[in-house]
Length: 249
Image (cartoon, rainbow, N blue to C red; front, side, top):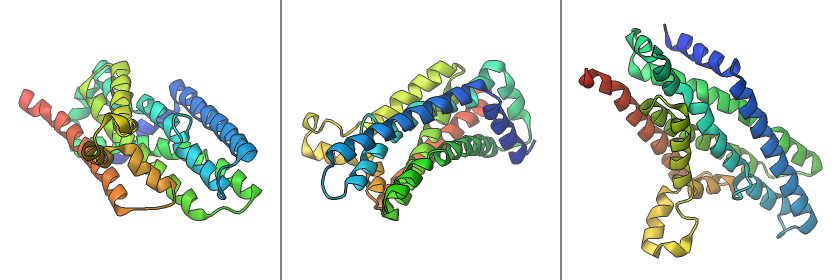
């Protein structure tokens, strides 16, 4: 088996599973509902001169009724099975006997889940297309917002893969992933609970703070580095978990 064969196997597992279609339906229904309700709200009441710009910020990052929050809720359902199911069925041992490096196995599973993420994000392009039909919009917030969503989703996958590699229970993997992601997401939500020095440190770790910059139309190298480091860190941990079979015997 090669990287490509494993990648195709994982993709096939997604698109032949009823869970994926249920999850995708929930994702698009919730995103559509939030898009409609936020748009009506801003059209009716409007805030500031850049009404559609403020709407776009609320739709992508306005807690808790935003596209990013829906993504945070559904991504653990996509990642929970990647290693946990293999462990439960006992196929992980067979997989690890193939002449594949651990990083190749991780890369194939990660890439397959990332492809599914792309399908979900592409499915939401109708929202900005509808806005553009209403009136011209600056491209920067649209493009950087989607780039932020992509980084966000890839980070969710890296964390979910790590947790899935730790357990054979898919429900445990999904709940634990959701808990960790929510913690990184909400680190700075209650500013009154932390002193200013602590808050500055938490802001450097907060996923929401780094994502919000993208939605505002700014691509800051520090935010890009944050997500790259987040992904690399959890992928590193996943590789250590896979390698642990050699010293456990």
